[in-house]
Length: 415
Image (cartoon, rainbow, N blue to C red; front, side, top):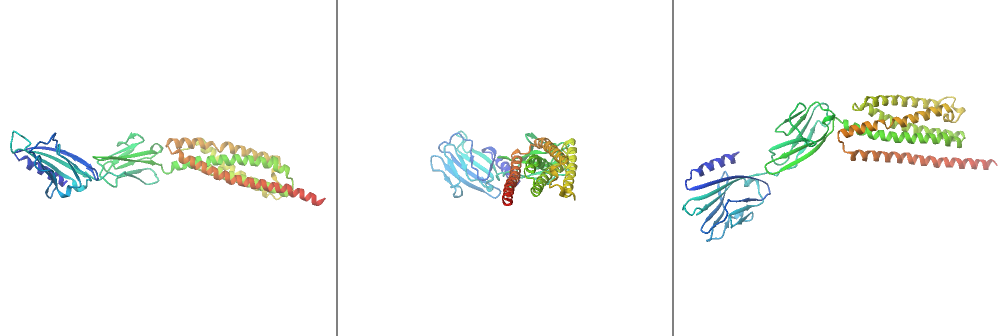
């Protein structure tokens, strides 16, 4: 502020000088830049005397003196290693600018007007050196949104004169849902819903540069819930499909080939482990689906039915395995009724498990959530799941091969 007042007073005093012509110009630059101080002179002539001076609030300092045709240009010691002088037109290049370089740079030329002896040509430049504008930072408060949210755009260095907000590529202005305050540095969003999620960009501008940064707004973890539904539904579909295949293998191959009670009992235990694993995966997916208010109501009702069915089947299988008269048969899976019920529910689970995938993917696309992140999460989870199940299946097959060898060895021993 002081430099503007000082500049005005200096110009008023200089304006009272009758024997001079005044020209003034304002320029802006940033720290560490270089700038050309031009006197608006096309050509320097012999016998002209040029002086560049720097004026701040404390004093007036001589930067350069040049008597054309008489002496060589002379720079003051402070500016010798920071300035480059162009003698042809009197231009001065000031390098490695600092905040302290802000002020008035004045070129005075004597003998400029050949027909008016003693009249001076004075060219004044007001230079304002500012801090380099740093890339701003967007701070979201609160991190998890209930109803309202604030996005604050903060620049660590520099003083932006203008701040703009964009959602995607559309400029944001004050409205019933958006409020800009604190010189546009704060964006307040009220009555937050799914339409507000997405990419918000803060653009900070000063007199010499422009910086921007983008922030992805997640609505109270809703998108995180969509992502979890998508991932768990894919895992549930893989789990129920593998469980149905394993159940069919146990019922139609293992129980028929290995009829000894202890082997059928082991096959039943293997079936229960695989089935409970698929129930847990499907149960988690269904619970997430019910908790997400953006999922279509029909999918949420189906998820509720699936939860009831899973709990009922868990109790039913536990009852069959722990039944006091189960010792009559090594496995309840040899009975037709139990087979049909278990295979029927397995097919039903395979059909309903992928239903939330479509709805969750629609919600994710609505908020333009980065698909790379989702793909990595799905692939990683599936690889871990298939690795665990695959190793368990290989171990089970190896064990079944030893059952056959034990059976043969027992027969040879009896002979």
